[in-house]
Image (cartoon, rainbow, N blue to C red):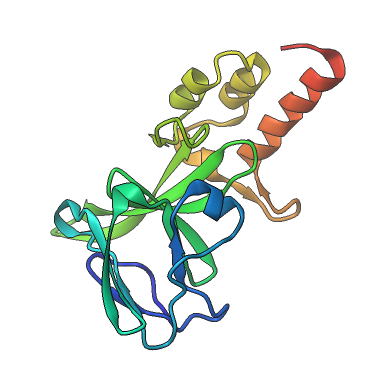
Length: 189
C-alpha cells in the first residue's frame, strides 16, 4: 500500500484501486483522466522539503521530471491531490466550492507533530485560502444568507470541517446549498 504522503518520500504504485497517476490539467482532473498511470515498478517522488518545485517519476523505466506549477495534481490511494504554489493539498470535497486539507507540522512540547490544516478555494482561478469564517465571508460577499449562516452556525473556524455522517457531507456544504436553494426558489440574496 502507498502510505500517507510524507515529505520527500518515494511512492510505489501499489494502492487498492490500482491507480496512481498525474492529472496534467484541471480538465483532466474533472474527467478523471490520469496521465503517467504508474505500474507496480514505477515510482513518484513528490519533493516536499525545501519548497520542492518538481515531481520526479520513474515511469516505464524512464526518468520524468514535471514542474508542480505546470500540472494540476495527482491521484493515489483513492484520493486526489492538487498542487498550488508547490504545496500539496488533498481534495476533500468539490461540490459548490473546493475544500482541501493539508498536513503541517506543529510544535508540541519539545517536538513536532503532524496536524491537518483546512483550506478552500472558490474555483480554480481563485487562490487557495485558509478555511476561516472571515475568509469565507470575504469570498462570498453577494451570498448574504450563506455569510449569516456561517456566523450563526459555526462557533469557531475549527468547526468548519464538521462532517455529517447521516447525510455524508460537510455541514458547511449543506449550509451553502441550502442558501442556493433559497435564492433559486425565492429570488432572494
